[in-house]
Length: 206
Figure 1: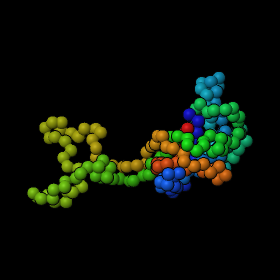
Figure 2: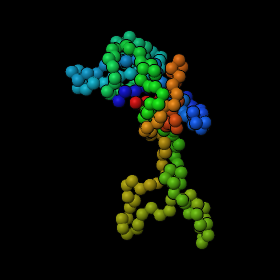
Figure 3: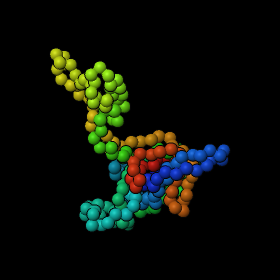
Figure 4: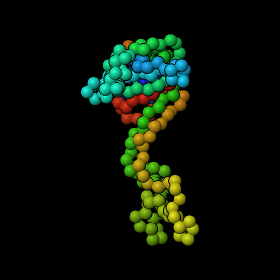
């Protein structure tokens, strides 16, 4: 799918033509540089590798530095591949937000969700806990309860929903509508929320 790399700016809201207040996420999209053109002859499939946002040369490995210099661009902080990109693009081409997206487009947005740290079962898996605090229950309101049997299976099954690390996973939100494109500032406004914290990188696919 055709798309670009972007960065989450934050949330806002705009009024639709019907006068409804529409919550939106502001995403800075591109401009992205074509850092590699993959073809069936050389790589076995057709794809475009795009780079977004400059990165200091001292933080880039020499092999990567040569890769970006071949494309005639500065090192990029985020690189991603896109399949089925429309149009002819050459190494070093710059693709802006208006080249790919327009208002009323539908996009899929993927990113890394916010990390929540170590969480209990109530927050992580929406357990009810022990709501009844009578009959000898003491400080068990948010505990998971029994985990496994004694004689059988004499262990805890793998995959049991328990407390643990939450968040920090790759999440993809499908079918978000682009309500506004601000080409001069490389911004798009999509209806609804997208994964990640402010400033995190996103992959926006059309």
